[in-house]
Length: 169
Image 1 (cartoon, one colour):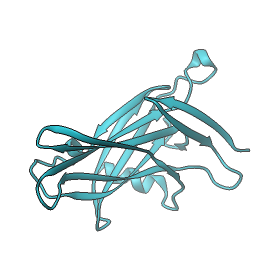
Image 2 (image 1 turned 60 degrees about the vertical axis):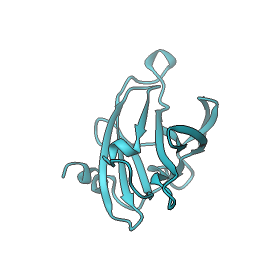
Image 3 (image 1 turned 90 degrees about the vertical axis):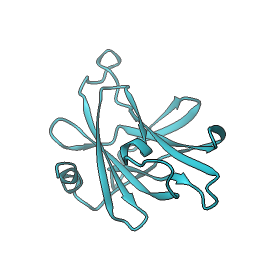
Image 4 (image 1 turned 30 degrees about the vertical axis):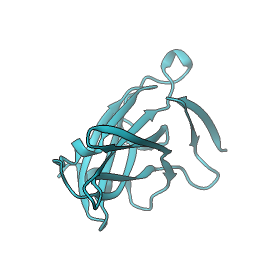
């Protein structure tokens, strides 16, 4: 049976579905962009916010901490880096893509995709992760535009342990 929950986070409605009739969500994915445009005028950076939507014990849930793995790939589908984050129930993390990829400005625009998975203490994938991405655009040091979008909940045919092994290299 499909159970969906709606969360209001920083003014955005996020939907988390635990399970479906056939498949269960195994990952969140999105698109990142960093660096300057072709003219060298506009700088962009992407921030990812991940939320552990499992409830704390006093709300009828468990207090188990989850490990979130976020995998970054460039626009040629090459693996770049893995970032690990531990989240308690009802906890959230904000990831600065430019810092994680260790990109020093100025740099020409770079883009790619990222996938995030959450596992419990026995390394089983769980579907309590929801999130969104924020892109901030600057001209010189002045913020000129912000865009936000929810992350796409998806399933993966790749065994989660294969993804997790990328973090251990």
